[in-house]
Image 1 (tube, rainbow, N blue to C red):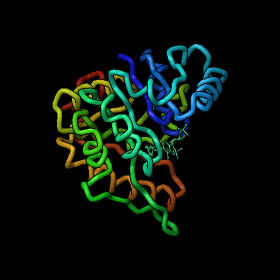
Image 2: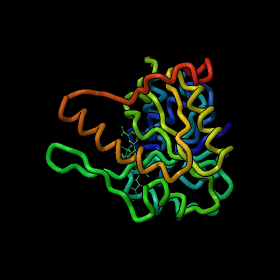
Image 3: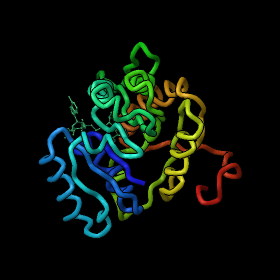
Length: 225
Ligand SMILES: NC(=O)c1ccc[n+]([C@@H]2O[C@H](COP(=O)([O-])OP(=O)(O)OC[C@H]3O[C@@H](n4cnc5c(N)ncnc54)[C@H](OP(=O)(O)O)[C@@H]3O)[C@@H](O)[C@H]2O)c1
């Protein structure tokens, strides 16, 4: 499967692009400016060599035409970027990993748009795309450390059953992440607001915590436990 990443020059997009390439996916790392994508991919190739041999620099136009597309721009630009590519994204599985957050003193607070979540706003921006919210709780540094296994649980929400299952399968292919089906896109508000709590906890406890559910081990495919 060819996966395009919009905004793959930031820590989150670069990290997930590199991680997916290291697992054998063909990944098109997009940017508004091809030269920024080229230098981001070159830096990853210098660091990881053959591990990222299926990662290619492109502009966002090309990334938006992949079978699966990840919106990884900063959250403020996620809706406008989706509107820009709404025709290209029609019928495609689109992963929304952006999260509206603002830092106020020693805490993060969620920024929730009128649609109910940023993921829902991304869906409204590309009504014919199959938007699935995922990966908001996985730190960019975890994606990018290709020499280390990943750890964490990924809550997955989306209105299209097939697209949600495609994303759950993608998560299952990423050792050692576990994906959980949390239902329709309306529930993405929980993912997005909890990200503010998680980042505030990490800030205040000076930690790098992520999310792990207890009691569900027996209910996941073996490969994903
Ligand atoms: N950082 C994390 O640990 C983490 C983890 C999970 C999820 N997330 C979410 O993932 C998203 C990206 O995080 P990040 O830290 O990588 O963000 P970032 O570095 O602030 O931005 C990512 C990319 O967005 C593009 N961009 C910036 N302004 C834009 C605009 N006006 N229009 C279109 N594209 C624009 C830029 O790419 P070009 O200039 O190359 O186009 C930039 O490199 C965020 O929404 C965040 O909530 C982050």
